[in-house]
Image (cartoon, rainbow, N blue to C red):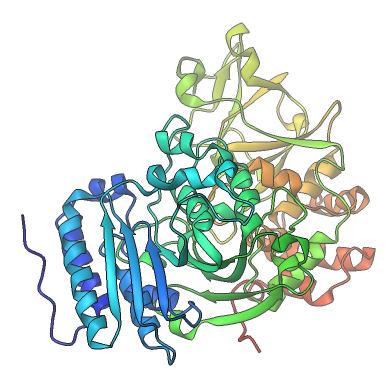
Length: 549
């Protein structure tokens, strides 16, 4: 077996762990890294996470459930050792399943033990070469909980720190079956790490995790959020604005968030005085000089809702926009509207999709047909623009009537997450139409959208107000129908007024922002003038964070 790199004289353990991790990563393929869902934590991020931990007691129990090369364990121990009231003893438990890394992780922990000893702290560590979820998922079973809130015979920890693996697992995966009480659909493994870890904290124990931000919203994470936030009270959320810069040595195409939470069972019953610190940096390079603000928990999460979406505003402007949008009286459901996903899945309908016009062929629209407030068909693209209308495709086709089409995915370089356009039946002389699976479509149940309603809803979905609101809780490139179904909207009267103006001609996005904001103020459905001003200012909302008082 290859020997680990040697430590340097007076080298901090976290920097040694980083060197070992990068050395090991350079010996493995990209496919190997992806398979294990591991991404190296940069030293600056590890130091930031470790610095969130509160003052320790004399004996500390720490868990790192996905240790990798051990950088987070080392950074936390370094931080605790630098406290004025530093601990005498640290008991560290780490889990790692990648066989090739175990010997090198052990070398790092031995070096950490020696380094702490010179600081007068005795370290005892245990390295488990086993699956953290399968070993500990039983702690999620309420039958394991005693009258005193202790979970069976499981070890309880003062601090749990982790950069867990990120990848989806099937519903039939043993880890999914072991965590059925907190998952729905096809889960991501990192959510299982978070759920199990929360149940392994002591009362008052602290959890410090860096993960994708996708758990903040969406149907797949609804049950997880409900169960997790019953016992874990957020203390701080740190948001990375860049989808790639948080892990700048690898490509992670989601925004990242650091969550610092405390085990506080039943905290939802009294949230009046509960606040959360929200901080923000573009990525690693500016994390030491991050901006921050403090907000009531009620502004971050609706604790009375089972959905428990996490809005994470990074500035006062963004928070005011969230206030404004939440004050709107409508929604798709309240307006008698529904949103669904396009039923044409190309690989399942290959034999019916064509570029040939003619008898029995009807339009097939893709994301490429939809731009802001403009649906164009046909277009010159590799995507075939027709689908055969027959008994075999009847279930895939929709009546040709007015809809609002919305892209389900955004490219990482796009300025805005939401791209919507009206689809008007009068422009397409067919009885039925096909919408590909990467489109969502809005329609009126048992009726039809008017032209003004279609334009109004599309204009609102394209405006900066709703884009900023949506980005505050959606941290990936997917636009979920569930999230849009719950998004607040102005009254239908205002929607129609907006649509009447939007239908008059092609406007730039900044022009749309300006007159939507003005119309909302005039109608009385925008009582926060500052929010509407920053909504109409492309350089205003969502790019700056202010220093907390």
